Amino acid sequence: MPVALAVGLALTSACSPTAMTAPTAGAVQPPVKTSAYLFTYFTKNGEDGLHLAASTDGYHWEKLNGGRSTLTPTVGISKLMRDPCIVRGPDGTYHMVWTAGWKENVIGYASSKDIVTWSEQKAIPVMAHEPGVLNTWAPEIVYDEKRSEFLIFWSSTVTGKFTETIGSSEEQYNHRIYSTTTKDFVTFSPTKLFYDPGFSVIDATFLRFNGRDHLIVKDETRNPPKKYLQLADATDLQGPFGQLSAPITPRGLWVEGPTALQVGNDAIVYFDAYTSKHYGALRSRDLVTWEDVTAQMHFPDEGTPVRMRHGTVIAVPAALVETLRVGTPTPPSTSTK
Image: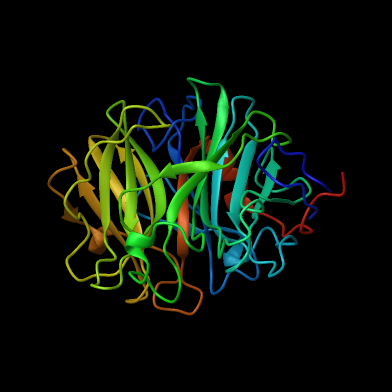
């Protein structure tokens, strides 16, 4: 079904978490009293769709639905569902965006009231106006309470732009973060450059810690190798953003896909150590000194071909997790309504 877009986005056919009561999770969403967290992730190349894990403490994660996919991708040329990111809207509806393929100018979108039955999937052509775009990766979605709208942001390489860092990443990639906003997922604001730190950057996400927002990004520089995470203060979800911190991930470890929560007094940042093929986590109480708490984590299927990949943590009502834990039937790829 076509998606109507505002001027600046072409017409085509076809994620960070919530402010909570206690504990507090990630970037802005409507307040939700909860003691549960949901991890949305993919496995392998993302070909079989959405996977879910749940936790009550942020440390011990159990896979739901027996580890089977709960939603099969149907949009995009490649029909993948990588990097799924879900946000809970003011009316309780969950909105999900994802990477639909490696070399595409669209992102995937669907919504659900219960994380089981989903709307028709749509391809949102966020980069279709850029003929030189090479990719549209790792979209994230947050609810901006200040403006009563959803903010969607992702990383893309546009051929010929940011010439000062051409050749710094693999192949022809030279990423920056772009964004759009929407109130209804029908009309979208024109795509704009969201964040340019002066290097090839991917996998941006927000952490809300002690009532303040922080932007976490990955330096994608390959020459010389960096591949680490940094964070900056965010005075507003739309920026401007403060000076980037020193790298927070272990030295020499290549990581991607950060996602973050506040659990009690601690900020926890989860990451996919993709070259080492494991999930990891960091913990801090001041966002300056970070402790590697990977050994204290339990992630499902670690060390297997179906291990968790680049996911997003969100806060959800505990009752929802209990319902999903009892048994989430594998539905058709989308609802028929």
